[in-house]
Image (tube, rainbow, N blue to C red; front, side):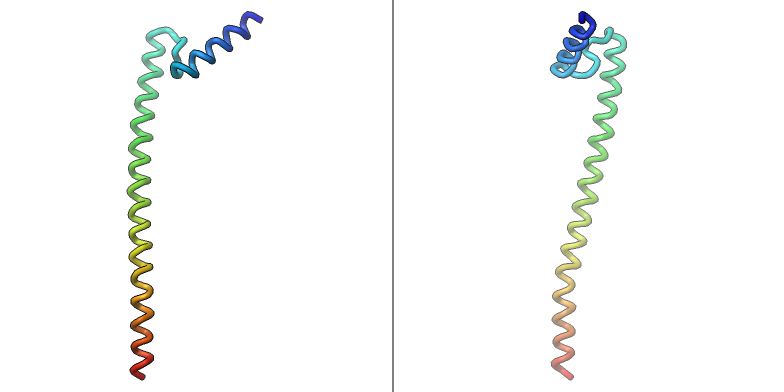
Length: 81
């Protein structure tokens, strides 16, 4: 019973204060360094995804604008004949 209570307490601390809060200082610093490193790589990945998405949207919008223009040219050619 005691073990279960301590595990619950540790879990609550970890939820509130972040991962590795109950670890010894040296290990906690390692965990924090890993988490910071992961956060940086995730931030860079999200920025790349956002840029790619913007490029795709711009490309799609350009294609959408080009399609009506191409359709109008076909209609003009058909009228001339």
